[in-house]
Image (cartoon, rainbow, N blue to C red; front, side, top):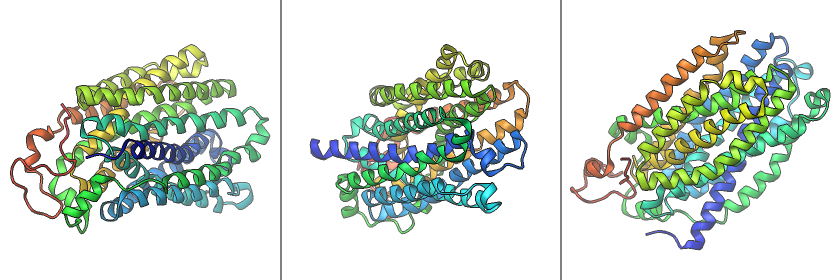
Length: 447
């Protein structure tokens, strides 16, 4: 049973717009951490040290994401998906607006970076619950045979956000450097509050998912869903973490570390790379639903493994080609990395995770797997800077990146076929179901 077409369309729009706004807020910070936060909040450090400290605050938001996922996941499994979508957007919006009001180190001293980290943690808590709520709201309103396509809509919100945040910084970075560092960087953070208001209004108009309503009527909610998940499906949790680590590593490397690496060549190269990111992100808006639909047709495994392989291929020449500032070479790195590789991985990932777990513990389950995976990936910029230092060669980083993508691909390939072992899953009330009786929403086809 699925929702009426009009209701489903509204849900897809609400999940996409809200996710776009929330990721826009999150990646404003990512772009700013690569471009301006080092000298503004950590001026006593060397150039490399400032970038390293800035990336550490960027990673702090990711560390908070599992906490947000567990918090919102717990109530999302017990109360519902819809209300959590509103709360996550509100938390993220307030934190992002606050970043735009922060004093710099020259004004407030050590208090400035402390406040920066605090707001970044609040961002992480909000985004930690956002992904799961948006994915489940869209996926659980759709038919089982189209989970990949439906779950790709919130993923499009991510791509739109990547485009929007980089477009914003491309525009404001055209102003004189002094103005950009003094007040220009604040504008995107302050303006985001308008978008947050629109997103909350849209989300208040959607209905709870039929799958959750049906599951709640038939099953008593688990007292602590995440404990049940970890006790009964630890292998699936590990598989989900590794799969998520792969996709998070693509974003951390190509949109944060490599942007900062290329920016060393000067403002013109920085502008070219940011423009390339925008083009690749727009392309991903097209490829995400395509790969989502392909994962419905051919299975999640081949589509996602293809993405991991392309990501490694794009990483090999990335450092030299991006630093060259040649628009063609920049496009030849970023389009395969984001439009194709990340589009393939991310287009199938949500449905891949949704298919692993039953409805009434699903929010908590995907919170653990996805958020832990991307949290680990957030340390990639730190690791990459520490490994390379001031050296120009990125070969050690490429090798480490290839290892991570290979591990992710192996995990996806080893995912259980839910059709074959559905009868082994227990329902959220803790009772074994008879063989052949399906648990709501738990049967997927990873192939």
